[in-house]
Image (cartoon, rainbow over the protein chains, first blue to last red):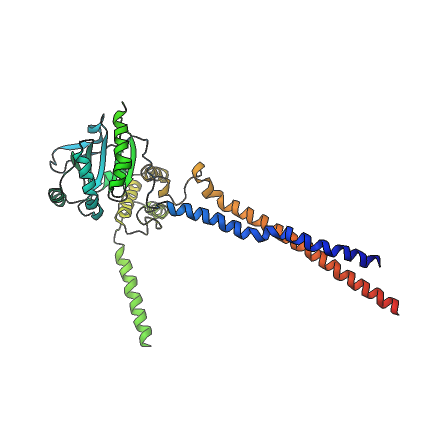
Length: 198
Length: 155
């Protein structure tokens, strides 16, 4: 008799305990799902093509290359010391460079900053022809025929644009074509700011 | 039989094409150098086709980086020097095994953290089940005992 009494008191306790203990197992999948959603959401806002450059905040790699229009003359990073300047990597075979060229030309016309071109793995004749056709916004273009200087600067796709300050430190790298938007919102304000620095 | 032969021919043609795609032949001074070259280009990641190493990629940049690796090996540079050269230019991204530092802690230990959480949840679920199982067992035991007792009484 006492035994049946015990089991009777046991019974109502059981269902009360079950939902309390089972809730962890029940809510865990939803929790994991939400965490995944957050991480995937963050992932969607990132561009995997944009590998951060290890040169930001470091001295610009030195180079000494013949100039495109005047191969007997050379151009080096040291030549640009004391000025804010841009290194724009381009090639006549690069399709998106053509789209970018209008924006770079616009910046060139502003007389705000010296732009040095790095003519990457190109044929001299093709490059000269290309500039004649689309205009030449560059102070000069360095010819990097075998792409060695490109490797030294960590170039992995054309076009790329580096902003170098008066002390010769790389301050910004733009990967891919510079758009009107990135010119207005990032590059021009940054160049103005760097020109203020002593 | 015929479609089989066609398939084999097609396979052979495809294999031959992939063999043609890799034409660079580098001459090394020693077999050790060649082995080092092969393991280095397996460990270096191509920045253009980001899911390939520079050994597998046919991108122009991968070709240049293989050339660079070759030249550095022949010039007597150590593996460490070659890795440093690449990381200085392309960042940790170029390594398939990035070094352990603050920014890569989650990458290295994240899977273990998730494993521990998983085990913890598993243990909790198993414990809970055991508790329930123990209870139901006890209950059936009670019933059986009661039944036996009743039988005893009847006899």
